[in-house]
Length: 251
Image 1: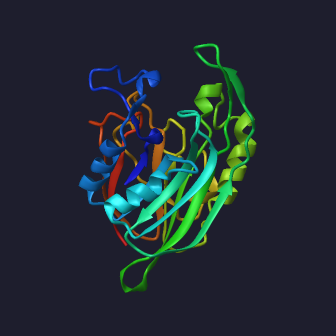
Image 2: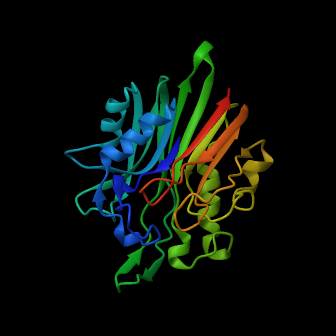
């Protein structure tokens, strides 16, 4: 499963799902119950809240009885002031070779709808190798990219070129079997124009028929290499500002 959980904040059922400012209610139990009902073996998450007192990735792994997990902090949270945002990988299989890299931050700036000043936050990518049945190795990567749309930046334009090159360089494509899931913040069914070198090197993508956010955007994507995709579907009846994506693969 792939999911940007937004700090596990949810809206009320009757709230407008397209209003970003209404996702303010604590929904950690809600999020963990959806994850549990998916019966996933591997979960990638973004905007996981972490502080000196809590780590949502650790708490989720404990609740789901996932013995292996990694979590990497990449910026202060814009959702809750005393928290930090992290990417996370939760796995039923042993994880090793854990690495985290921050992406180049162009420090885009803009003014929000309420007059607040926006500056692009740091983003990053987590990587780890899972040892599956019969000793098979699967590299799992998860990332969170700059929200280009919030700064009126074309992710394929010149202003985003340095970001594109850095992202493509830090997505390591060395492992024969690779699963990359994340919030790319790029509203397009295919990432081929954004990451041409990866696709030229045997990378494939799950083309989702359903948007991954309540605003009808395709921000979340799944790429893979070296194994077979069986099925994927977007779970749209949730109260978070991104939808979880459930997938099945034959490795």
